[in-house]
Length: 112
Image 1 (spheres, one colour):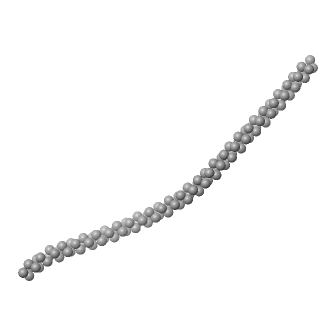
Image 2 (image 1 turned 60 degrees about the vertical axis):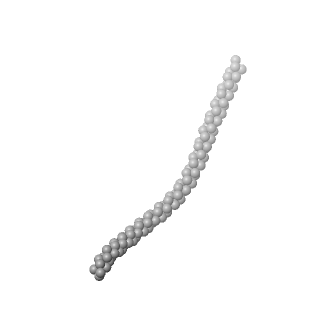
Image 3 (image 1 turned 90 degrees about the vertical axis):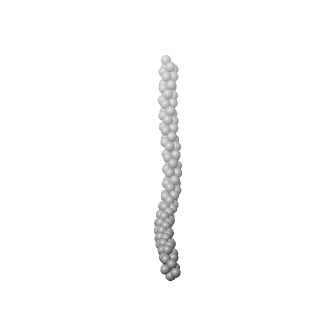
C-alpha cells in the first residue's frame, strides 16, 4: 500500500514539475515579450519625434517656397515692364524719325 501510494505520487510530482517548468518558461517568454514591446515603444517614440521634426522642416520649406514664388512673380512682372518700356521707347523713336522724314519730304516737295 505504501509502495502503491509512492508509485502514484511519483507521476503526480513529475507532472507538477513539468507544469512548474512550463510556467517558468512562459514567464521567461513573457519577460522577453515585455522587453521587445518596450524596445518597439521606444523606437516608435523616436520615429514619432523625428516625424514631428520633419513636419516642422516641411512647414518652413513651404514658407520659403511661397516667398521664392512671390519673388519670381515680381521679377517676371518687372522684366515684362522693362521689355514693354523699351519697345514703347523704340516705337516713339521710330515715330519721331518717321515724322522727321515725312517733314523733310514735304519740304523737298514744297521746294520744288
